Image 1: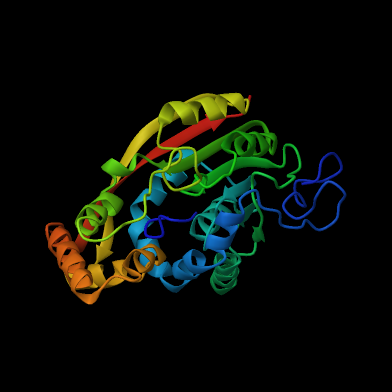
Image 2: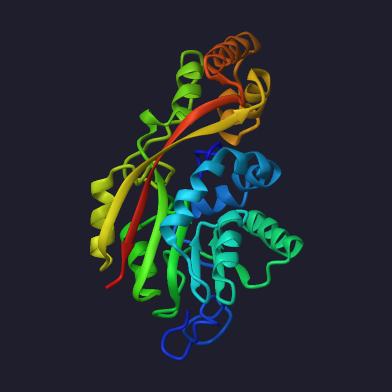
Length: 310
């Protein structure tokens, strides 16, 4: 998630068609979350911010979608699971690629899921469903899916080992995983550049807490490889993806947008006006060094990860 860096079926008898909506007993699944903090964030300020600024967030992440979809290589008739689907952009692309197959998007955030459902209806995509669920705990039917995808949604698990194990069980033999996760915060200018400018004047929340769910929790490729291997996957491939992320039409637009985020609101809470202005001036100066003909752009660096279930 580019700006809100804070936060973010039945076994046996279940068919692949009902795998997205039924639990082990065949009853409608009840959402359960391993991380109350993540659920609170994504059903609160972070989720609402994503919905309110959906088009802007999508513009920031647009360049990351083509390599992810190419790696997933979704074919007609396949069943796709999108983990951390947010407002549904990747899920809808997956559903279209699956044609007469199906795509299920799961996410903690009901505000974002409501936007995804609205979007699917508006765009006339029928072979898609969205469910509020924690993919770490959701009892998917074994072998229910051909492909699991995620565009920057797998870094927020309370227990990544358990989560990837659960997702792997939901894949058929020969099923595939393709996902993006952020590289370390230090090489991600969309976070490090504003952080450098602001932290000289105000206290900015730490974005990189080892062992905690968060956008940079899977920044170590060796750890990612180990998680997938322990989940029973093979053929793990991890490659670097670096793309410019559009932050605003000009410097003032980029500054104004940055100040709307829940993390910025938290950082500026209680700050006196003089300090606030100094911090914003520093942010303005730093972002000014990243003007391009397209507007203000900062670099984003992610790992593109693929693997297969034997």
